[in-house]
Length: 104
Image (tube, rainbow, N blue to C red; front, side, top):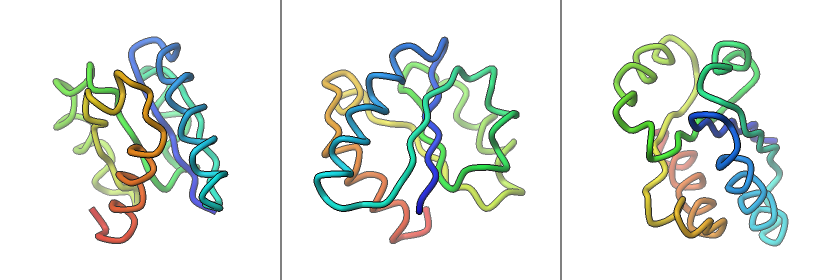
């Protein structure tokens, strides 16, 4: 099972995106857990996740987040605005699967 954490500023918008990812993943038969939290809670969850997805409005923090995560076996990506803004769970799953396949 892949453990995914999705972070945003306050944790509210990421909750909607996480739900869309869970629904799309379930339809595809992907075993994963997807949690949504605020960026300020990241350190509480880093040892419990395989993938970290970051809301596009936190792109300015991408380097800082990757630096924080680089010593851990966690894949990190910023979700593109077109996926996040439309809550496209299928495209988010595509992004997730690509990250897992390529190791990026």
